[in-house]
Amino acid sequence: MSTMQTIVSFCYLIAAVGFVLGLHLMNSPASARRGNQLSAAGMVLAVGATLAQVIDDRVITTTGWIVLGAGALLGGLIGLRAAVLVKMTAVPQLVSLFNAVGGGAAALIALADFVRLTANAGAPITPRTMVATVLDVLIGALTFSGSLIAAGKLQGWITGNPVVFPGSRYFNVALAAVALGGGGYLISGSNSAAVLIVVLVAALALGVFMVLPIGGADMPVVISLLNALTGTAVAMAGFVIDNTALIIAGALVGASGGILTKLMADAMNRSIANIIVGGFGTGDAAVTSTTAVGGDVRQLTAEDVAIQLVYATKVIIVPGYGLAAAQAQHEVRDLSKLLEDRGVEVSFAIHPVAGRMPGHMNVLLAEADVPYTELKEMSEINPEFVQTDVALVIGANDVINPAARRPGNAVSGMPILDVDQAKNIIVIKRSMGHGYAGIDNELYVNPKTGMFFADAKVGLSAIIASAKALVATG
Amino acid sequence: MSADLIADISIFVLSVLVGFEVISKVPATLHTPLMSAANSIHGIVFVGVMITAAAAHSTLGYVLAFVAAAFGAMNVVGGYRVTDRMLKMFRKRPATVDAEHVA
Image (cartoon, rainbow over all chains, first blue to last red; front, side, top):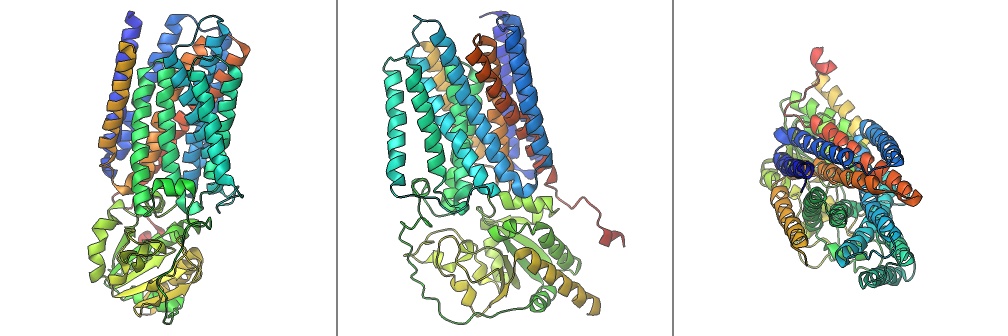
């Protein structure tokens, strides 16, 4: 090992420590920002050390410098611009997009390496490199196209509804078989570029057709899974070019994505396999409603809601997907501030899958300047509902359905917020429509529940106006 | 199997375990920034792109390196920037002074 290589290796080690400590600091909102900065510092060190090594090696051509510099400048500027301008409601699709290009870059590393190695005819590619190349191309290409489709769905360019066609499942199995078969052929000793292209195309197609049938509400799980896969692809790229920095960082991300995927799937009461293969909304899951919801729905006006809230002592707000979709985070925060100024105790109960990606609701409320100390996790807030005067549910449905406590229906076993234990319940919702699980919600006919049918943003504005009038006169 | 490969596999497996350990303590409140931060960390792919670009000597190699450089840089620069933007918003107390307060 040359002195240069030794120095670079130690820089990679320091960078890896920066990544691990950076992630560790994300255990608390107070230190999270420092954690990310530490991780960024590690990244700068790793890139700087690599740059020094590339200069020291003197192998890179002038054209090499130009393509590297121009590409980095172009991509860096696009990424920076997108990061600065993106709206917080659109963060899930941006994360998806960054995930796509990360996976794409990982796959391209393997492809470029293959091109270089096969150019020296006669020099066989070692099985180790070939295994890593095949895995990198497979996983990287799949996450690239899959993440682009996910981003398109989140952005609304592609329908959020599951897209299926007859025999789509067999088609996916066939694609997977082609990709794996081609990969196996390459590993068994072939250097065929044509076969690698077949593997690449099959993996790209598989990414598209795997994500298309997945419904919008499953996106938190899908994004996490794609994130895990990109990390894995980057680690595989590390095996291809024999670089420990890529292996360590890729493995860290693969693990984190894996954990989040599991957490999200648990919070939605679904197995990961079930989501990937397609479930609710595709018409092939047994959606049975064992709750024959009887009883009347009590309808409220904005004034009714305002009166209940203003004269309450303790209010818990339960924001859901509907609030994120209506971009009503600023209105909900205005309402909570108005109530707090009256001396009402307000907190937010956040279900793990509220929003469009894991933890998305917290970011939206943080953006609207809700202090994170008011954002309560499910286990923390559930015991508090009993002493709560009003639980205000905004655009959430399945995550508060008491049917989850009984076996035999689509939400059975799903962890829910115990909204039904509050003294009064107000639900702001556009209609009596079903949630994602497609079953009735008995909470809506609970005698304690009042329904206010409105879009989250419009409805909250009306409630705020009524509450202000009430406070002014009263 | 070479000793190098075994060392690499060991590093990979141990890193996965470290990842599990570190991530499982992150509160749900921070899951979005966490995912975005993890996203930035796989921007390390840019290091790989630099090494690949340095070794490229054919037209096809240059084209692949160019696209990979753009992708990798977008991932790493955008990822860290947007994560920082999000984390900056997590505050204990509202920082902005509202018009209502001033009045």
